[in-house]
Image (cartoon, rainbow, N blue to C red; front, side):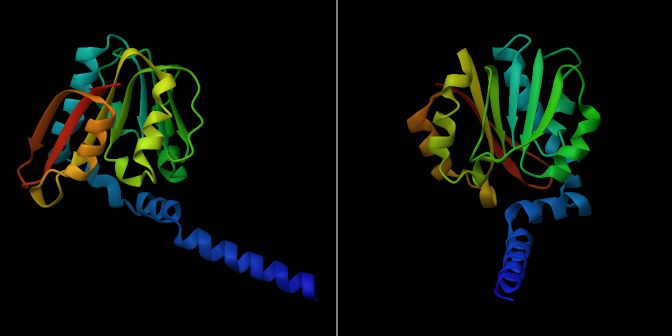
Length: 200
């Protein structure tokens, strides 16, 4: 009788953890269309700044998009503008939706940004509205250094909370990396984002 009780308790515990996890919440949001607004015109400027930076600094780059969601950034690249694109997100629902964009030069994988297992090297690494989900941003970013090519770039897009630049993130990044350029974009709804490009 005792083993059955433990088994039931394990099942209940597992169910509660799953239902309260951040991954579960994101899966639900992608299933419910909560993130569909990321394709609206008000989001376009920040995506174009990111792809513009990549095109300026890297010719036919290998791109690593961390927190790629359903692959919206990938959709903004001109055809043939990169050698290879890898998108990683911890929502398996988002990655399943992104798979329609996959081809011989484009891949999408489920992965936890805090426990990444990266192979190969990249010319451009992007955190597009995803730095917020890092438990230890400094450690996570430093772990990517061996995978960034010589002269490669790391790009961050961070929403300006209540219209104010989130210095708590930028101060950490500025102490860790060399700032190359910074752009702030606004949309008609009054939302704004800061996008910065760095080298290690």
